[in-house]
Length: 214
Image (cartoon, rainbow, N blue to C red):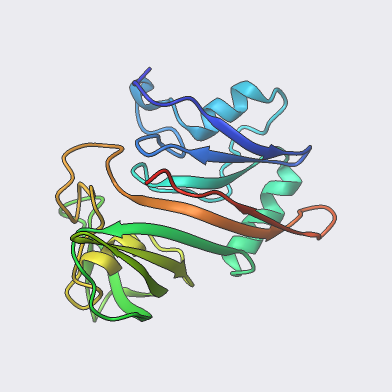
C-alpha cells in the first residue's frame, strides 16, 4: 500500500462514520491495485457490513479534514440527497501563499475540466459551470494569509481554483501541487474544519468541527 497516514475516526453511529482525512490520502480508490488504499477502503475494513460504495462526498487527495462516509444504503441515499440539494454546510480553513488585501466577499467563477490536462480545472465563461464561494480573511501570518472558505457549490477543485485564479483571489493555497508551488501530495494547507448535515434516520442536525494542524 502507499505510505499514507492512519485513518482517524472522529465519530460513528450505525449509519455513518466521520473521519479526519489526512492530506495525501485518496477519498475513494483510484484505478489499479496500487491506488486501492483510501478513506472508503479503510472504513469498509474497519466496519464489517459497511456497504460496498460508501462515499457520500469526496475531498481532494491533497485536502485534509472532516468527511462523512455512509455505512448503510439508506444513509447513502439520504446523505447524498442532502449534499446534492445543498442541505449540508461546510467550512474550510486555508493558508494562501501571499497577502490578501481585502477582508472578504463572494467569489463566483465559471470553470470546467481541462480535458487535455486532467484533473486540472480551467476558467471558461462559455462552457464552464458556476462555482460560488464565500470567503473571509482571518489573519496575516508573515507572508501568508489565513482564510475561511464556505463553498455554496461543491465543484471539483473549486476552492483551489477560486484561490489561485486572477479573477478570484489571485493567490494559490500553500502547497497546492496543481495551481501553486506544491511539489507532492500532502503538502497543501486546505482543511475541512466544519461539517453539518441532518441525521439520515432521525433528521437531527449533526455538526462536527476539527481544527487544522497548520
